[in-house]
Amino acid sequence: MPIFTIDPKIVAQNPFLFRDWAPLTTAILLMIIATAILHIIAMTASIRAYQIAESTFVAPIEYTYLVFAAVIDFAMWEVLPSSTTLIGITLVVGSGILITLRELAAKKSQID
Image 1: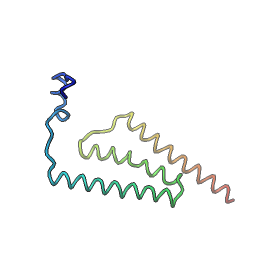
Image 2: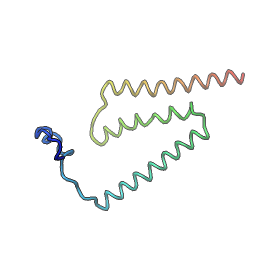
Image 3: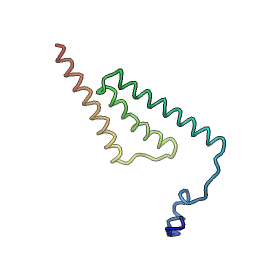
Image 4: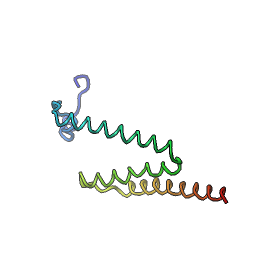
C-alpha cells in the first residue's frame, strides 16, 4: 500500500499477509465454489431446522461448531485450544444444554 509505510520487521514476521497476489488456479476456484455450495446447504438446513423444531432444541446443537473448530484446529495445525478457550466452549455448550433441559422440564410440567 503506497499510502502507508509498513515496518519491514512486521512484513518479515507476516509474509503471508504481504506477499504478492497469487493467480487463481482451477483447483482454488473449485474449492471456493465447493465451500460456497456447502455453506448454502448448511445455512438452509439450519434455517429449516429452526422452522420445524423448537429453537431451544436447535440452538444448542448449532453451537457444536465450537467443538468441531477446536478439533479441526488440532487436526490441521496441531494447535491445542487454550484454557480460556476451553472454558468458553464449556460455558457456551453448557448453557445451551441447561436451557434445553429447563425448557423440557417446563413443557413436561405444563403437560402434567
